[in-house]
Length: 258
Image (cartoon, rainbow, N blue to C red):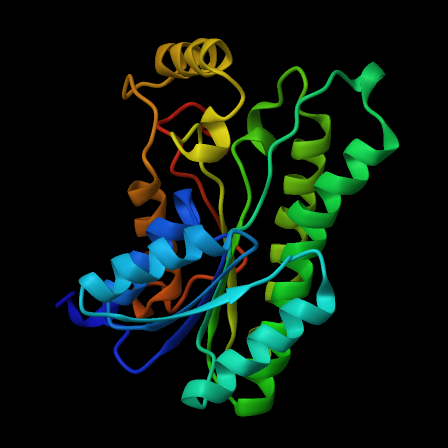
């Protein structure tokens, strides 16, 4: 049982991107802290595996196979989640994709696809979660997933970086708008994390990037999904009751913004 401030017993959490990586780790950890977790992703098999992990740990999980870039699908699932337990207390908008292309070679379809999932999908999740929380009078927590890319930049990161920068602005703006309702909105901006998303681009790309990140980090390593999940848990819990509009950067010290 977590210390009292991290105890989520009786609360309902909705996690997008829950089929793997940071989303899966976040869903499992929130459930371990006591929350009923609704897991959303377009990967049905991955969702099944995540739900099994939650249940193995004694938690409760529901799954929603959907595309976060489809507002109607996401709205329906979030409404169903709130109806299941009578409230929605936590939204963790984690779903995202990676894309790499030089600025001069970036196509409209590249930018549109990344923005649809990495920004619009987060926007839709935040909007519906906030509406649900306000209607129920819930003093909830919304956690978005930004990226260390907004602090460091890098070749090929135009689409991904632009979308994640938009998530940061969404987080700060929404925090000012829903704060009077007692709702907190914060972002996690991870450094390089070893997940299926970051490793599917090929061994040589992965090895080169990880080697670079290891050299840049004062800690001398890259991160694991569970370490980012702990940041999500902190922001979702009462331990962060006076924290809103902030960007938490578990990045191994690769970037240290003022």
